Image 1: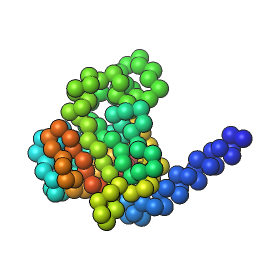
Image 2 (image 1 turned 60 degrees about the horizontal axis):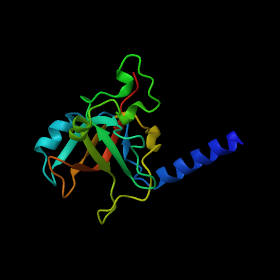
Image 3 (image 1 turned 30 degrees about the vertical axis):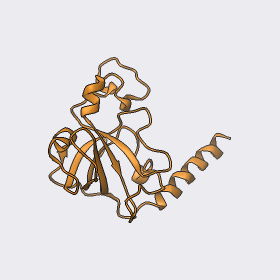
Image 4 (image 1 turned 180 degrees about the vertical axis):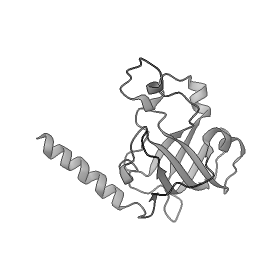
Amino acid sequence: MRILIACLVAFAAAAAAADLPADLVVTQAPEGAANVIATKATAKPGDPVIIRGRVGGRAQPFVAGRAVMALVDASATACDAIPGDNCAKPWDYCCEDRETLKAALAMVQVIDDVGRPLAAGLEGAGGLKAGDRVVVVGTVAAGSNAESLVVNANRLYIEPHK
């Protein structure tokens, strides 16, 4: 039974990833990445950006059935960076001050030709999972501001685990 469930989960992730652009996840690290907080302070809608962060900020940082995820600035403290902490979901940043986390959070989405997030989950794309450190190349979405940054991604680089 466990094998069947694992196969179904893998099949669903592969099917969702098939609906994402084939060139979305890249193997070469983009140069010039800025952190989320600095980008939020200066970026305007339409600006091209390259940002680095960690997939997280909530227990489930991926939006089910949509190409949307939350990204947290590297300066925020994930639970697994705290000695002795045994948090089951360290990428949720439950140990971080809520206002600090809010300032360090951005949303990343992959959109269709009319500006809506694709109906395919990002989780599993190229092996992407909660807690991964990524570099996102994209454009600041309309309506973004210093409080709420949304990036329309066209490239994702998943940094190797150390």
